[in-house]
Image (spheres, rainbow, N blue to C red):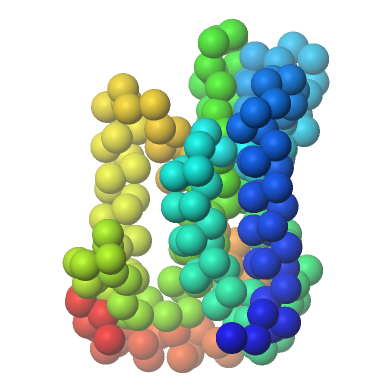
Length: 216
C-alpha cells in the first residue's frame, strides 16, 4: 500500500493517536481541550470544537474512529486530488470545518449546562464517510464486518438512526455530532463538485441510475 497517496489521512490518524494517548492519562490536558460548551461560551474557548475532535474516551473509541476514517479518508483524499477538486487543501478544509459544524448543535443546546462535555472525531469521520459516498453510492459497506449494504443505503439508515437516537438520548453518545457531521460532509462535497468540476455529476447520476442495495 502506497501511503504517500494519502498523507493527510495518515497525519490526522497519527495526531489523533498521540493526542488521545496523552489525554488518557493527563486530566489537565483533557480538561483544557475537551468539548465543553459552557466554557466555550463563558470564556470564548471556541478552540475546544477543534481540540475535542482529537481526544477519545478510550482505546476502543479511538480505534473504531480511526479504522473507519482510514478506509474512507484515504479514498476521499485521493478522489479530491485526481478529480481536480482542490486535493489535500479541500480535504483538510472538509475535516476541520466538519469538526466545527458537528460541534455547533451541542454548543447551542448545552452552553448553559456546566456538566455537559463531548469528545471524539466522530463528527469529522462521519463527514468524510458521507463525502466518499457521494463518489461511489453503491459501493459495498460491511456493517459490523458481516452485513453487506450499499453505501447509499447505509447513509440513509445512518441518518435515521442518528435522528432517532438523538431524540431518545440516554446512551452517552453525541448523535447530533454524528448527524450534522455527516450532513456537512455530504453538502460540502456536493458544493465542491458543483463549484470546481460539475461535469462529475454526470458520472454520479449514471451510477445512481443503476442501484444495488447490497452494493457491488
